[in-house]
Image (cartoon, rainbow, N blue to C red; front, top):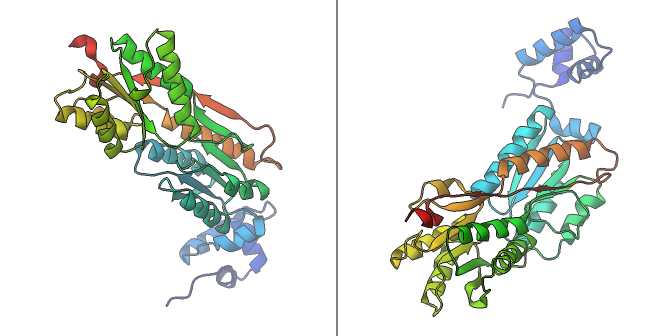
Length: 340
């Protein structure tokens, strides 16, 4: 096996001290431009790559950020990760991604694994199972930045980037009402997560503001998946008081709703369907899906900006920010009743 090049090899080739090589490679100002250039050129010639671990031990920083998400399969979370990476790359930070797959046990293991990897900070969107958030406390205890995005718990006194989820539920419901739907159902998760509770409360408020009755049998607590959407739609459409529109907890659930409605010849927009997240597939299914845009790209950019502020403070939790993004309706065929 070929021996890895070290700074000792560079020093030997140039007949200079090891400390001079080290200072030249780390940008030490007292090193002349000529010496710096010679060291850099020799490092390239010898295929030298710096020992990141040794550098991290010396500086106390690895320039690695951990990002925990429920799933990278969702375009929403993939877009956030992409924008976090893009927003941090010019500052020399790299990203390690950990999927919880909606499991709190996986999430706990993720926090532990990332801290063992000596990451400089963690950004996280919580799993559906997360109730006890004490595993996140160790990040704060180590005085490392913790940023929660999308799914958050206000018990943790940390910066957050979220959507106005009450408004999201409200405008989804209002959009359906404006299109002429009057018996609107909601298929959502059984897990008591703040963002989904807020959306449900927004739905209830919109019905009340427009003098439409709230029917408890029109609220299905299940999960967030295509399978759960199919189940919810089937149960609703078999009921005596069938809805004429269905709000789904996310776009995957909405896809399941549409599949089931098409099977029973209730193809949208005959029965209106709207989801959340503006997943990439939502514009390409038939009929294409109306949805709430949660501004994933902006959320990722705000995460990156917030981290860079926190990492440059002695106390990262000084002047904490809570950024709330404004949701928007993306109107497509699945709710376009007025053109029928």
